[in-house]
Image (tube, rainbow, N blue to C red; front, side, top):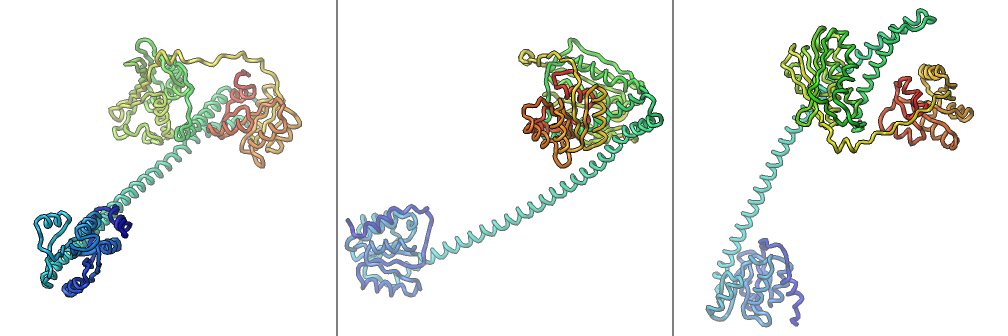
Length: 559
């Protein structure tokens, strides 16, 4: 093996990327020291450092350490000749462009010239070498490399300048974009803030509307608390409480939509009966304003698969709007039918209509442009909720109007239930309701008025009731009395309702005790948390007497 085979192999296996690399020094390879001295003297005016090598192997070692501007290579050398050395130099991608001038003491033969060119030679010199010729030839290659390097540097400088200009342009565009986005966000915030203020003003008005008759009714009852409550006053109180509850339900539905927690309880629904139920609910309001309310169906009533409570809510909203935005003595029509496997319900009126500019936004939340001077427009939630409920059922809702004072039409389209859906529906079986019985109950709430009213309601129903105001007292009383049922508020002082339930389930694991969470927290997560804490049922305030009585007996029992 050649003594320098390892170094030669290192050069031959080089896998650098094929890029042009030029150094500043000149590599001179010759086994004769006299020739080295002569070449060194001839090239001194070029003011370049000369690296002298006395064999091909030594030359290759220098190439591993640095790049060169020019290689002057003797052909006839012992061991590795100039041709073999040139072949190994050219085998390295990094040095393939390094110019090589071959030097020999013999006359060049054609085959040797061709072989030299194949190995990458750029010129040939025959000894004895004339210094000015060698210097001129070497100078040409060095100047060419200098110009190439200058062009490369200029190109890099231009590229960097272009990059900087591009970055400046991007920065300016980004600044303009951010400025536009910020301006747009500011406009949106200002619009949102304005709509929030309008919403709060309308909310205050909508709350005052039912609160005023409630206050008047209370004052009327206080005149002579011995007299029974007149039916008319009782009806006013029930109606206004229902109105407040509806406002709260709408606000809660908005929150449920935004969190994706609104659930549908689907079942087959006859569209004709759905319309009939909604019309029955709204007919008193229509009659109060002397409207002519007509209902008509086309063909056989289609069946849809949906939540009847929610769809009646949608229909009632459309009818309530038609009644509200039609002057007294107007005409309202409800049509239903089946077209292209889509059930439709169409509510039309000859009322105030919808401005063209408002139509695209009529289903947006908190849109209150239709609010009247008396505040009769509501919170701007109903249509938005109605449209989203219809879309949850796989349907769509649209509105049309020719403009102010031309009336409006709202249409609901719902997919007709197919046979597979109907055959796959299995309603919950009815259970025989047990006979109601008197229970021992505990009511726990830190709100004194609510606590005492619920306790009085249960006493009127024949139950034995104890009322307490905080968590520790609730745990103590329930441990002592072992009641059948306890209605417990969640937001109690000192010890909240969840802690009360956990403590009771731990202390009374075998007791037949029904725990009911009665709270203002109405999200699905609140119900899940209550059940996990040990409650058997979860009802949301405000709760009707019927709902409370059903809860204390259990969902399957009828009070």
